[in-house]
Image (spheres, rainbow over the protein chains, first blue to last red):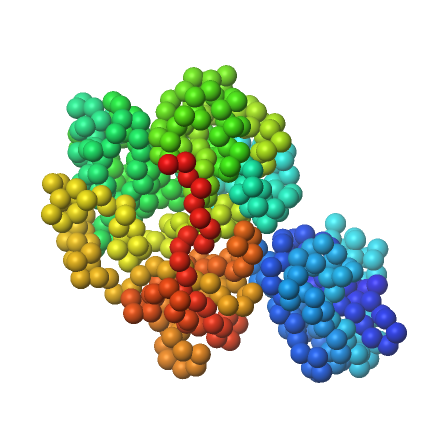
Length: 119
Length: 374
């Protein structure tokens, strides 16, 4: 798993990359009450705002960590946004992206580096 | 952060794992480890303990006792204070000459004097206002006492176990009780829509008292985050957001706070700042009204969200003044001001969220029913 400075995690599954936010981020945000997901088929460029999440405190944007096409979104979050808090790195994933260039993953942190980054 | 004031419970908040934020010049807990959602639900299900020591506690005395203090204070608030029973309190607001609201507050008849609780952000101005405008009164700010609120269906049993006698109090009763924690000034009131109490305790006893309350399995500490969602579900105004110097009590739907005797035609009608403006609005109607708003989707419409009459085109017709997710109603909720013709229950208007106009329905307040012990 790779991690961005924006507190997203990326996990390669077959030829897709699954994206969510870290447990640390979900704790900082507080209880998530609303998630707005992108449409399947959207072409995204790294740093595009693709997801809006609202917690009990505020709204935040989730950026596309790499270029590619959104091929699947986690519809469960529409009715159960709390899953982001309950299982940030599992059931709380946001979208799956078909990467244009998997090499873009290389610039991101591994778990040890991320733990150092947040501590 | 060096300049922030602290309450007597500051160290306890930190010990309980609170996340602290600056609020009205004070270092205050916004949430504890349980988080806003769980704290909110716990308060409605059992009981929550809130530190509200940042609020101003003020004693107003006059040579003529409570009667004189009440008479003079009636020049500042449209509240029937002369008719307020001994050991009873009322909600009220300081008005300005334009009929706007300078602050909202609680006023209590404590027999030989008046006890007043004002908002933290306004307390300096409120005290100066009272000192300038109550010529025969002595206005004393109480700075050596903490103020806590215990709110929720279990509040009565929990407090009664520590302070026998409080269970017999009715909503808006006040009392002075001796206890293991020194003299406690207690009112049966609060700002969550739940039954409960606000308790003033000496700063030296505040931590011990708070620990005694928290020792009950029913009581959890609640931060400002849940305090805000609780009061919003209860349809209660937050000063500086839902009401301010530019909103009148009529626009704010707070005329229930103006008793008949102070209204046009009453025995002590008017005599408070802005009375003419307020009476004219009560007679002819205000141009706008504070309403409850229920977004039809799940996206919260927060403070500042512009409201439109139609899904496309036109200028904004109003704004959201408070907005959040309501954990008890399990839906987003807002309050805001709308022109009178649109301010009727069931009307669908549109709030602009991230550039998109989303439907929102004018709804009844409160969003959750009040559980006061009348």
